[in-house]
Amino acid sequence: MDYWLVSFRLFFAFALVLVFFQFSGSKRQFSQMTTFDLISNFILSAILGGYLFNPEATWTGFIYVLSVYFILSWIINYLAGHTSWGRGIIIGTPTVIINEGRLNPKSLRKMNMNMTDFMSLLRTKEVHSLDDVKLAQIEVGGELTVVRKGEENYAVMLIESGRINRENLKHIKKTQKWLREELKKHHVAKIEDVFYAQWLNGEFYLLKYK
Image (cartoon, rainbow, N blue to C red; front, side):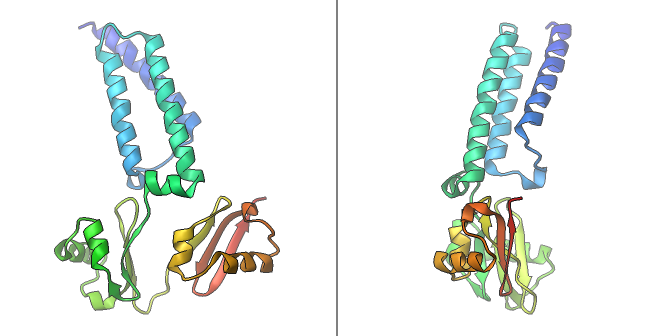
């Protein structure tokens, strides 16, 4: 093995991947990584490994494959960030296990969890009885969010980047007609003008694009 060649390729690959990541704008922490991020990283590792340890691999071929990889990643991330169907398929949505104090066994089965696993997760949040829980859901990243009885609910996102989150709207039992009426009260004519909107304890809050 030509260690000097491998070292040079490693330096070249590291610099190129760093540049690509800077331009891609991906700044997620490990705790925020989705299933797509993990799969994407495995594919990137395979590309790097093939370039580093295959003497027949050329730097032009490496740049071409890496470019295709990042273009596909950008397209998929764009769909996930700008379309509701893309976000649901690529990133996923939170799964509500307990809502208004009522446990949903179907949600547990959907997550391939049993009560032993779920109670174990609750204990990590210092909750030892189902009777104390008002709301519990598994986030996209696998973390458990818990709201105890007597505590305020968390804010529910209704609009993100000019797009309605229909699942969350259904969750708070509101309609798109109601949402548009709320926007009118805030002197907003189009949903596309809203960067972010939320519903928390009966209060509607929004941020418009500047």
